[in-house]
Amino acid sequence: MVDKPQSGELFGVPYNFERPSLKRLVSSYWQPGDGLLVEKPFGIGYTLNLANWRAWVVLAVAGALLYQERRGETDEFEDESEDEPVEVVVD
Image (cartoon, rainbow, N blue to C red):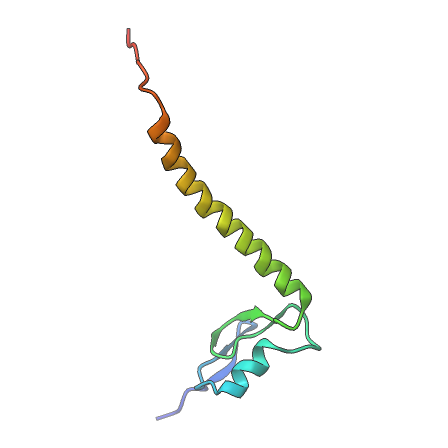
């Protein structure tokens, strides 16, 4: 039986299913010389390079949008309790 490769590329997308070590996890998320995206230490695709300042901007924007979305959900329920009943007339 032929062993399947644990890491490589498929259609230009990297994959790696080898068991990650702590050193490999840290070194894959913190690569000062590389761009915004780096290969994931485990799984398929890319992840953010936390050594790049643009990654922190992306995380801050995503966090702000998530905060705004969750705050908006609670505001909707509070507004519904304050509304008065509406009369609908159908001819």
